[in-house]
Amino acid sequence: MTLSEEDYIKAIYHLGKGENTTVTTNAIAKGMDTKPSSVTDMVKKLSDKGLVNYKKYQGVTLTALGENSALSIVRKHRLWEVFLVDKLNFSWDEVHEVAEQLEHIKSEKMIDHLDAYLGFPKIDPHGDPIPSKDGEFKKSIKKLLNEASMGVEGICVGVKDSSVAFLKFLDKNKIALGDTVTVIDKEEFDGSLHIKINGRNMHISNQIASNLYLQISE
Amino acid sequence: MTLSEEDYIKAIYHLGKGENTTVTTNAIAKGMDTKPSSVTDMVKKLSDKGLVNYKKYQGVTLTALGENSALSIVRKHRLWEVFLVDKLNFSWDEVHEVAEQLEHIKSEKMIDHLDAYLGFPKIDPHGDPIPSKDGEFKKSIKKLLNEASMGVEGICVGVKDSSVAFLKFLDKNKIALGDTVTVIDKEEFDGSLHIKINGRNMHISNQIASNLYLQISE
DNA sequence: AATAATATTTAGGCAAATCTAAAAATATGT
DNA sequence: ACATATTTTTAGATTTGCCTAAATATTATT
Ligand SMILES: [Mn+2]
Ligand SMILES: [Mn+2]
Ligand SMILES: [Mn+2]
Ligand SMILES: [Mn+2]
Image 1 (cartoon, rainbow over the protein chains, first blue to last red):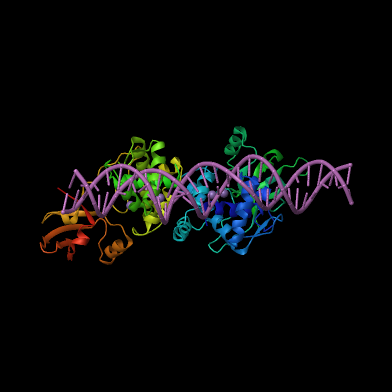
Image 2 (tube, rainbow over the protein chains, first blue to last red):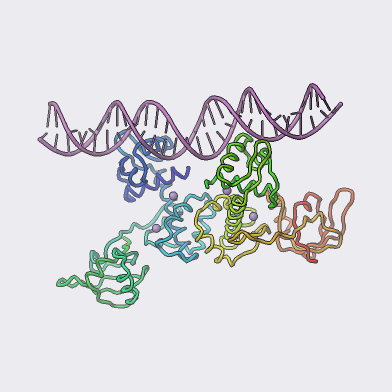
């Protein structure tokens, strides 16, 4: 598989939301910042190679082979992201572009050794799950904290409001990315939440809760 | 610079022996396992970009810009080789092919952080020097073992032939980088050498001796 | 059901990097 | 010095991945 083919397969996988729903030509073009005619060309090629199911005007789905390939690329992408954050001190918002390149390096031995070296991580720096070598992983959902039901547990993986004021507030209150959060109780009146964060009980306003993303694994 | 341009620039650098000697079209073709006509095409392109000096039928040399680029690629290649050996437990005969891919990843921040993470190594797993960020490195004072005089003692710091076959031969015969070698005697007839390596006596052919670099302690 | 709007495909072309075959320049040998 | 051999360049073709413009299919609207 060429670099370009890999990027298409990965895009089709993501646009199909991990589940194998049909993806349209225009959606792929938008997702990859290219033209629909280019997508048609490539989709034919991928179909010839048995990576996607394609019938004119009907959109595409990944074949079993295509889905395996997609998971393998996603695995590499996310393992490299962990490497960049854990070992090279990149911050979570700097890794994507580099991982976009690293995911195409071809060496099964390298990626397996990297996996072991990183301690077989289960999620990447954005809280997304890392498929195992044989393509298995837990599905997870990203939700705003104020939309999580009572009792739900998740990992804090991002902010909606990235203003300095908000980030300073989080810092001051020792809320950081990667923290484990459990929803203990919700106040009907003002939408505020009682949560447990890294074992510590806290009461946070709805305004805060509606700007924190939680990754919830099923 | 494209991946292919980078590989050409690196090949020209190596064929020029690190010194900036003129390199011929055929030499590049051989070194890169491609055809002379392809080399001519690419060399024109590199010349247009100011990376090489080129006049028809006269061969090429790197410009200052070209040499800087070459050193930057060599730096990346060798740092990744150190990473693979030191962190991912690759052996020195397995790293070249993967480093050939990794050297093209574009992120200055990543390579500088990698350098620091590896502890600013000065040589790669084959004993070759690693250029610093600004393209400086100590020219290696290494000498081929078959060129060393009798009685000379040195440390094995690199190989000239880095083919898998040769590296495997060395492993099998327990010859490794860092080993201390003393030249006991030289056979005039076939150029073979009697050496002492880590206290063990050995008789090696001229072919082996002419592919092992020694750093001689004066 | 006919028309308009949108989505998708086809046709034809371009740039990068490669190749083969032929032509031109350079180097070598007597 | 001249013929021959070798090296290098040119000409023309191919593949991959992309593009624009035009044609065609599908979907939405009246
Ligand atoms: Mn990519
Ligand atoms: Mn990620
Ligand atoms: Mn390379
Ligand atoms: Mn090396």
